[in-house]
Amino acid sequence: MNTEAKVGAFVLISLAILLGTIYRVSNMQMRGARVPYRTYLRYAGGLQSGADVLFGGIKVGTVTAVRPDPQDPTRIEILMDVKEGTPLNAKSVAKLGSVTIITSPVISISMGSNDAPRLPPNSVITSQESISIDDTQRKIVALADSAQGLLEAVHQDVNDLTGDARKLIANLNEITGKPNQQRVAEILTNTDALIANISPKIDHISDQLEKFSDDANALMGKLSPTVDNVNATVSNANDTITAVRQPLQANLAEMQKTLNQARGLIGDVRASLRAKDQAMGDTVENLRVTTDNLRELTESLKQRPWSLVRIRQPKDREVPK
Image 1 (cartoon, one colour):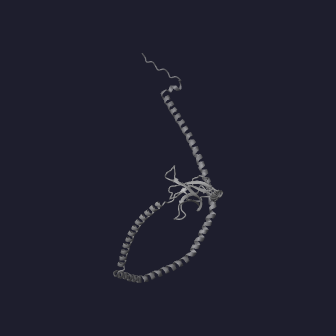
Image 2 (cartoon, rainbow, N blue to C red):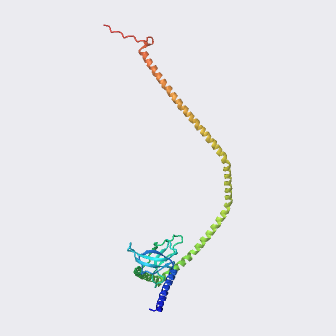
Image 3 (cartoon, helix red, strand yellow):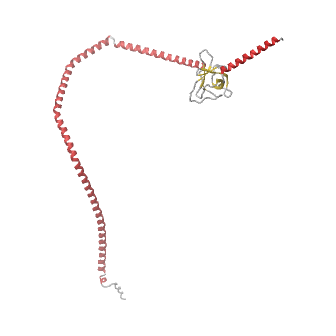
């Protein structure tokens, strides 16, 4: 290989290294520093690695892995890299979404709350399950079945309403037939005749009521002075009662005081009588005892009169032998 070939090869290699360096540096400047996060879903909906991660509708990162969770095989673990400085917080919620109907699925993260604490790197973002196409189809089928039943019920109700309407029309035709029309005409004729007969009586009653009203007005006019006099009498009686009330109350108070004193005096008299009754009882008892003693003394004197002279009773005489 000559010198020119070596120089050309060196230039090409240097150019390739330069282009690679420029591409990597520009890519890193465009992408910036990345922070890893993760979330978990029950249904991934065709999400693949490299899908966009949106925060409030703005692309802030990409999905790095979509795989079953090693600890829980019933859910999908989704790893993602998000630009450093993205304000993910504890109130942010990740869910499966898409920008348009025909685009690939993406991870959409809500903005959460400004007061919520920021999530550190490698944190788990709270997720919200989205409705899958299968669930949507099942709901549509269930809705179609219920709609079919509803249509059948409505059809039955419409048939019932149609039958009732026909019966109503038949009844109306029967009511508005010629025989009924004649009967209604007769009723109206009789009603007119009855009104014509009653009209003079109603006028007479109206005249009597008007006369009675006039008499009542005249009577009220005559009674008005009497009512005024009664009102004046009542007013005078009220004034008299008001004037007499105070002395009566004073007299009643004095009378109450006198009654209380009389009650006290009667109580004292009763107490004295009880004491005297007790003393008289003792005196009577003493008199009874004295009387008993005198009676015994009298009997003793009758039997032994010598006891007044002798202190001792003489001995009994001996029986002669």
